[in-house]
Image 1: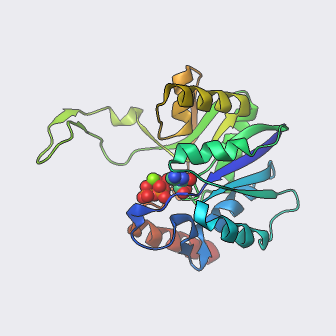
Image 2 (image 1 turned 90 degrees about the vertical axis):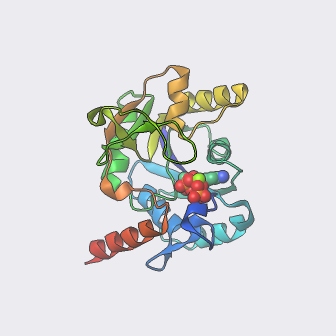
Image 3 (image 1 turned 30 degrees about the vertical axis):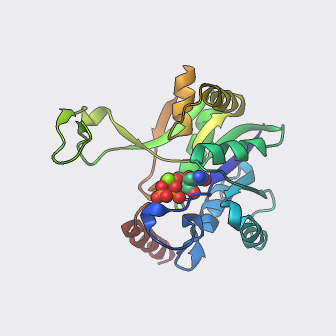
Length: 235
Ligand code: CTP
Ligand code: MG
């Protein structure tokens, strides 16, 4: 079965501050989305990339991506996104042709994920895992608090060694991911990542090693780090 990558890129990037939608902000002169598309197309296994664009910018994203030099095997499709990440992913899934058996979902906001991480996720799905997430151990200790104004009471301290920070691309057996999306839509709930939806189905989700360079560009300091990583790669 063929493998496709869906790239949700329709977010505004509120935490990054004022400016263009986050996926269109540049890193060393190249839009983050272009880096993310190249990162997916770098895998020999990926033959289709579905980009879910900010609705108002769909035409400009289409022209931006037609001019890209990508491997011959790689087809790129652009569809408009929705109000939430989940809705955007759904629109990307709806654009997949029938012969796709493995689906990656990859944040445009993680433009620098190395191809070895992408391939490790695909391999784990091909080996039979219905849902695979790349993840790293945490550097910081994590506290659960009772959220509120003023000093927040600590409720618990989960054992750090058992926690993982999850990244993308997350990889799925296509039918499992579609079932998970349908189930969530039916009960009207939301989820912050696709693997979480699969967990709610009661299907197994496994973790493979993530990579430091797959970090998410969220706040302004992350732009500084991303540009430094790119400069180091070129050196
Ligand atoms: N995303 C999307 N559609 C939305 C919201 C988010 O496709 N309605 C995408 C973003 O473009 C991003 C990924 O989901 O690639 C992860 O989301 P996040 O890092 O939160 O990006 P934003 O939502 O754009 O940022 P913020 O939350 O700071 O506004
Ligand atoms: Mg967001």
